[in-house]
Length: 254
Ligand code: NAP
Image 1 (spheres, helix red, strand yellow):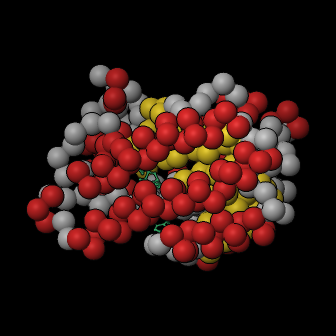
Image 2: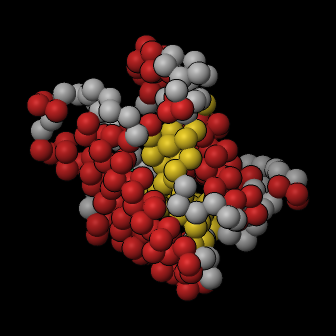
Image 3: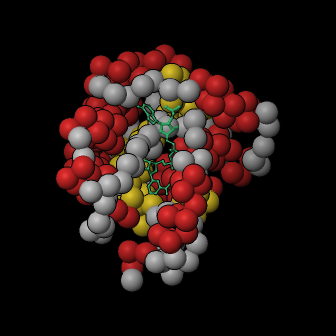
């Protein structure tokens, strides 16, 4: 377990969506290492419980909370369940759950369009609607949205996905304006190609996307999680509000 000096999130409750895999699982572990009680959200209970066990083993605190974030009602239920498990508080919200199907605009079925926007835009929107006012009432909190370089660059085949995350980038700033004066910091990480359970299934695409950045390699989930933990932790990033932080090996700088 982390040393006492690393316990900047001691006593805080952190809800991480999509924490059963990849970047979300790494963020859950990173937040727990700093002392947070982490609520691991996702659909897959077996993978969720594995993340919870990995956190509990060295003495961390975590619970799995099942949620399929397909519609606003389910999102509101997750907020309710999270508050129940967290003792009526959620101090940190990481909007990480997301899907990233790629393909030509003309081949995109309406159902897929709606699914991507439901998970990547509507779910964060209604989680913030439920939880940010409560954070403000308690005097503060931190919200971290997980975005992508495809939200900042025009990439062929990423119109649907990139546009959904561009909405999330704007929401990051709008929510910083809406809740920032009441102590709720809202920021985003704008992530470059990262090796996770999903992207590792298309290793060639991952490598060729990564080759376009100065770093020249994909990130590990832990490298992205480190930035999420930084933005979640008031002690580390107290004056950072409304920022969309590129964590992309330099891709959007060149
Ligand atoms: P991943 O390994 O595919 O994991 C996605 C997570 O989202 C899983 O925990 C999954 O949990 C959850 N999820 C999927 N559909 C859901 C639904 N309907 N309801 C609730 N949860 C759902 O993803 P990742 O690669 O770590 O990416 C995480 C985030 O980073 C995404 O927002 C993605 O857009 C962003 N990002 C990733 C990369 C990259 O290269 N990997 C780059 C830029 C940005 P269950 O299956 O248990 O539901």
